[in-house]
Image (tube, rainbow, N blue to C red; front, side, top):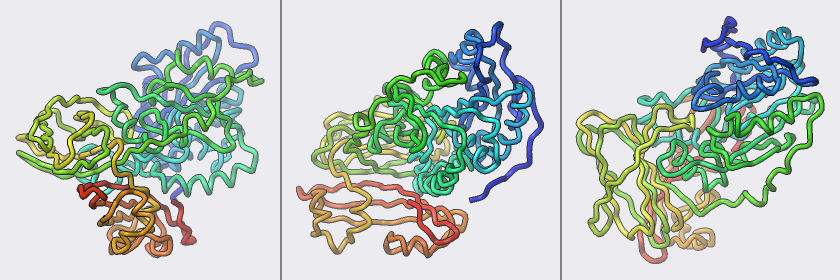
Length: 479
């Protein structure tokens, strides 16, 4: 993993979005005794404006309560190594300007940028505490999806494959955590974490992300609660916040305020891990491509599927969509929404939910006179739910083994596709054991596994599993 990309940027003033520019908020009439200045750090695909738009009153709320503030612009598309180096330089400037350590409040990837600055560039000396708001400390499965085989067609259209998103793949972050957490023994500034469990209603900009992530546990539509945690950080609160509302002043500042004083005030009791960790029986199928005129994708629904969500992702709002069920009924009430996850910037989601879907073959059809790139996400609640361990350990020829019988599957075929970064194309593997993966050499390996099989009831099914692993310079596999 690289540690820096860009040279330092020049300082800026309010309103600028140049990476490295920072500016103080309006000075409060009376500074709260014993308080530290608060530095707000944004996440991916955004700027410091995130703290002052869409009804966010956090800047004015902090000022009214007597707290000094500062806001910085980092690159919304760079990885933590580039942003961490830049932030470390600016933290010194900001600390000198305030003649004080600062308390960092970081949203999303901003928390990882902050930790990189502190651990790898000695910036901890300028930081009293770090508060992370739904930071994907362990990555996000949405980043894995963005770099998967089926998202390849739409990636160039959306510009979704940035270095920021790349660095948030779960395999990449596994290696980052191993390397970084070992260095936390040096006694760096304490971390306090917040996580969210809300993702809005059908048609909201985080709803589809919440549906996609729920098989990994509760999330805020972009980051799971599990990923928002650090083993050595103190979890302050897990609330019914979305990835967007967790940074709003009226929502979060009452908790932040307790952490920006010389002595931390008594914190609320965090929700216990056991009460929210349940993963739901949800699985997915992905397809994708490019078309002009008409595109048709076919898939199967087996017995036991309680709900079906079909999500057609594109950058176009000009197409028409029809979903036809096995009985020939046409479903056309698609809801269109943008994307606030940060992992698919400028994407439009055209989604429909079908309760108690009919068994058999379904057809998703799109019509567009213009050229359209797309990613199709089919989300199954219930039905076949194949685990990754089963996929790795069970070969097609062993379809009568214990692991397969446990899933109710009598036959399964796998197609494995590996995308290697940065080493490009290599021969596809026959298996996914660690020895085989280590043999591909240092880098990130994004694995897309397409499954097709038959259930014990003789019904066809299809699923996709995506996984990322990192092979380090020593040949160790992090997954």
